[in-house]
Image (tube, rainbow, N blue to C red; front, top):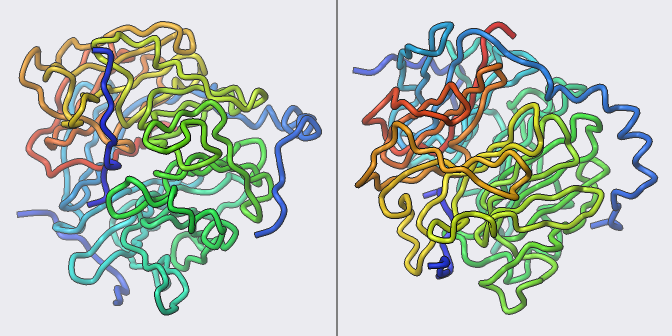
Length: 425
């Protein structure tokens, strides 16, 4: 089951709608980001869209263990209507929309006996088509086989038909035709470090690729998060890449400051400042200023009784210093529930120097759920909306930046991911 990575022990201080399926059928030298790159970044800075604000209704694309669902709000986000499911019974690891053209969506699915595949739609989900060539490693004796298409994301706005997919086991794939055919990115998939045993522990089912981030100023500048494997960076569109893990601790490895092998659970780029990265890791919450190329464990400033272990992290669309996390119990057996059965988000407005608990609306006791890495997102509205899907099949919404929370859907299958589609944009 493509969910959270297996955890090394760590003490913290202290009748459904029909779905119409159309046409279904069954390494080079490293290139580093240097100061020479800065003029290009600066000249393209105006392309950063993090300052834009959305308005009006919101749709949530909800990926679950038993299909995909959609939640649509009214203009004020005070009422919500649930529809679906799509692909009932299939594991939908990730369903994402294309902000370059809102009618296009791509989903990574696992179709029971038929195995992993990709579906895509060009009409907003009215009809779906299976990829004619989904992600697959080259066939060879003893070779890898794709177990799940874990993460999908649209490419840079200058590359309108490009999509990227991360797989279990570790693999990166690219589509240049809107999701119909996929080719392997050999510089990642064939890199000798992937044969290193550090990449094979301790995620269940082996390591996998998630958190594919693209610099809005430069289509060739990307980051990949691998669990377990660490963070990788490319400045040439994936032809070559380098490890970028300085400062990130790996307590489960023989060498805590290893070059690679860390377990980032989730990594996000600040929409307003793409040089700022945030990471929720197996070993804490981290923030990076790319010019320093060093991860700083800002989770050390979380309340000691809560700790800084979890899966998702969300950054404010207009403020790189404001972020949210949803902690889980990180004690010896890692029960993957809210600490003490008391769920809450934690918010920082100063880059992680301090954190504020936000629990209004959540159960005060016996709230034994958590939120997976792809299941917490924000919108871009003035009164910022935060959205999360839980392991017990609930969807929670806040329309005041986490100040209070409301459950808008219950009894869904276990939720693996959420994507936010805004109206009026």
